Length: 291
Ligand code: GDP
Ligand code: MG
Image (tube, rainbow, N blue to C red; front, side, top):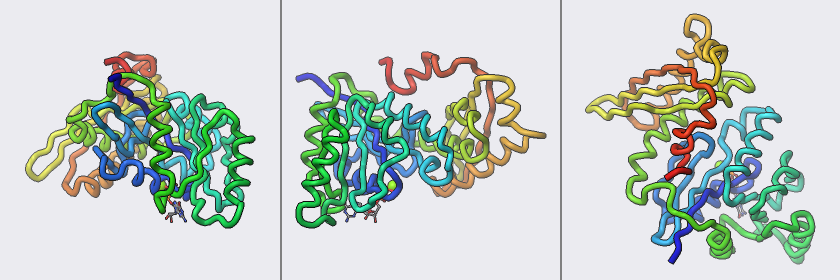
């Protein structure tokens, strides 16, 4: 039988129910769940692996949900999330009348889109039927499914659609070696998040973080990470006057790393210019695209 594998990106406004849904979808089949694991562009929430398929779920990074009114950054993120995903799950909170995301139009462009009308347990009478009808008209190319992430309603139905829409292909991640990888992901994600918090606009998008060494010693985690930028000018910005920028990123990241791993952390950060890292083979491998 042919194997299926792919990335499923979950989008939706804060409070729509994304985390609750993830817990449902991943449930006992969970291979890894970390609060903050990610590849470069996806924040991985969970990987579900079975003999015949592997689904890599990810959602909107918290920094875009919370802190930024950065419309442009958000749009760019959504664009990337759609591009990179094999399937997009759009979680809509049916109890939130204003739940038309800023990126509504963009989402409708997604090739494989499932619109999830979540929290239907809160609806009365024929409200659900009306909403379904409305959304089927709104998103004629999408699969529209009423669900209740909290009550577990229609989650099997959703899983069935995901499996049907998932492309054929080999797994992206080794089915046994997930935990090992995830620690590096977590470390890279934390550093990356601090970069997003500390620099403006385009700079974070020009950065890529790679943890090149991760040593778990008895009382200390020794982590070394490379921050790749595309141009020398960006390197200057990231490092900052007298190194102040990078130092701040390092201190903040170390605090989070220590909280996450429950251990003292020594973190070394280096900034390197690497033109066109986005097109680089290594990056593609990192994403798991060229096995
Ligand atoms: P996120 O911000 O999108 O990750 O949303 P959460 O998963 O954290 O959920 C936000 C709130 O909505 C929480 O209080 C959940 O308990 C609640 N919630 C999520 N799904 C449902 C649902 O299907 N029905 C109801 N009634 N509440 C839900
Ligand atoms: Mg959440």
